[in-house]
Length: 111
View 1: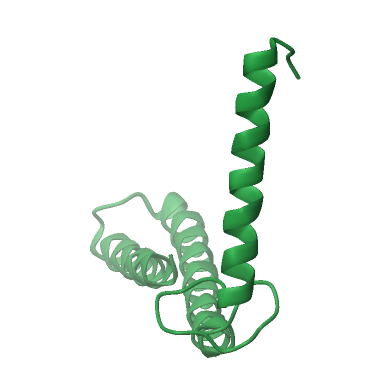
View 2: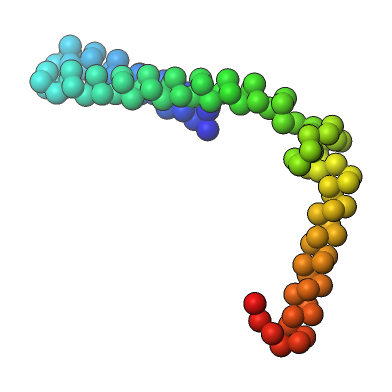
């Protein structure tokens, strides 16, 4: 998303410059050039600033969350979401939920 916003901002700024040059060359009506160029430049600056800010926040926050358990924050192996204790607890909870659902279906009662 950050990369898209940066490129969109640059594209809008380039469009604003093109509008100013086209107005100076007489290709676009002068009354509309200023308003369109100002709007395109403001959108471009906002998108570029947002893209830079999102890129910075993403780079800063990535090392803080990478390699940590989602529940307790203990260091874990690459590609994992939970530490071993929380992984086992989550698997047990899922099995228990599935077991209860099967028992409920067999008994005929619904939720």
